[in-house]
Amino acid sequence: MTLSKNYYFKVSINLTLGIFIACLIVFFLQYYLYDFTLEPTLRFLDKNTKLFFLQSFSVFVLYSWLYFILDSGILSGVLIFALACLIGEATSQKLLLRGEPLYPSDIYFLKDISFLIDMVDIKTLLSIIAGVVFIFIICIMYFIKRKKYKRTTFQKVLRLGGAVVSSLLLLNIYNFNQPGNKIKALFNDYTNWISYSQDQNYRVNGVVSGILYNLKSPALNKPDTYSKKEIERIYSKYLKEAERINEQSVCGKINLHTIAAQKYITPQAA
Image (cartoon, rainbow, N blue to C red):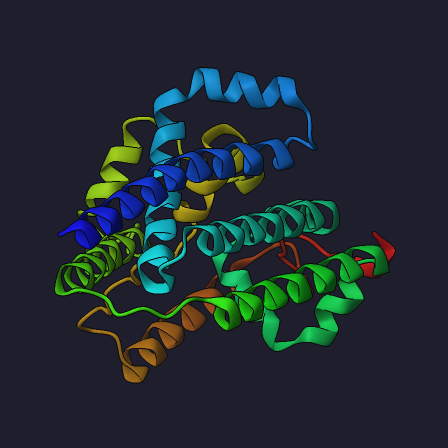
């Protein structure tokens, strides 16, 4: 019984620590976005206090999941903080090069490491490598020096239950943009989503909110009449209509080429 009480107390302390870490991470990400300027960061927190705690809850869920998996509050906190540093620096670099913050989908760029290396300066690259090595060493040292002890049934059930609950919450957060998502419904009460500028979206609604807003969204349903034959029919219809209009035009033959694009950019020249 004493062991169970001690373990329960340990879990309570680590989860309480997780709440503090989550709040600190949200503050740090916003502080990083505002180029380490305290005044706009505090103004954001003062204006969006409830939104700040909602974002902190999302980070706390991730911390809790790591904690119940790793069974270490310190290691979970280090990993969360390392992830926050990576997000903050990546957002800063991407804003500098492309004028937009980091999106969750940008993780696919990891497939092309050479492209990422070409984009960032050597100082930033060395900092990232040093950070990754440091985290790797911390994890190795933790698992080497970790004391192995026999857990009671209560401890196993508590840890398993915590892992299941946090996993379900994390899955709900991952499905942020799915129709009827309860967590997004809570965010909607305190946000003013900006779809046309994610830089402004992150600044107005918070970095964590912006990341959640840019998670995968459901695709449009495929129309029942969609087919290759139907597309060819529409093409033929409007081709004939265009030819008829051109024959009646008094402007003569016009050769017009249009290129539509959001932005052209050469990262090395930025």
